[in-house]
Amino acid sequence: MCYWVLSALLAEQGLRTLMINLEQAERGGLNSYIKKEGKSGLSDLLIEDRPLAELLFPVRKNLYYLPGGDLLKADRYIATEMATPNALLETAMNKQQHAFDVIIIDCAGNSKSHLAMNAFYWADAMLVAVGLREKGMDALGDFMDRQLPLMINRMRQSVGKEPIQIVNIIPNWHDRRTSGSSKQLEKLKKRHRELVSEPLTKVEAIEWAWKAKGAQNNKLDTSSAVG
Image (tube, rainbow, N blue to C red; front, side, top):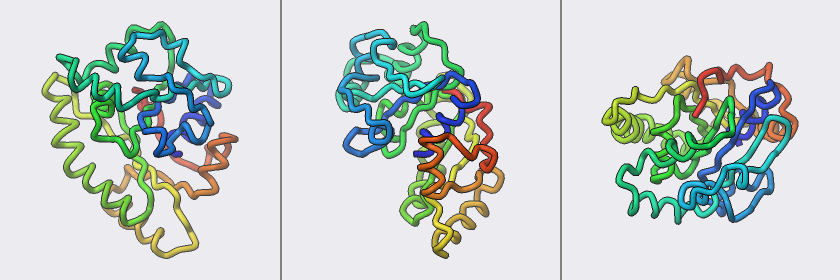
């Protein structure tokens, strides 16, 4: 949800914004929020070299959406057919004639797939959303301590790229009525300090996703969040 909120806000500010979904459809993700469940998408761009214009869904002014398509098929294709598997997404998108100011790729729940590694290879910066629950905090710890330094940045450095910059950590689904949520937020700010943005509550997230309101209340540095 955070990535859809951010995309809507950027589009409202006049930036041509593309959202790409790397979550499996059955897991929800962006597909479930904007109700674009077409079977075509990024997988067709990568495997069949279909034009991006045929696969995009215009959502609102300045905002476009590219579904994942058959993500399992695309992941298998990258693993078995590509000599340089991590560069496929970058190569395919660089061939497109559509100009976007910002491209946001939702890798939530799928961050260890070959497609996600393509996104991490290509991206200039990263926004990390974390649910203020024990399970979400554990997943963030594993990502920051192991996956980011040992997989993602090691892969980038092996081809001469700089380590990826984390622009913000966005606390998600904050429930101010419970002490547990507030304690997790306090723990998050203590560990990651200036990287942590103001939290999104469930109500705020849904309101922003559909109306793109309230940007003045969240201090997200989006200037470098370009893929």
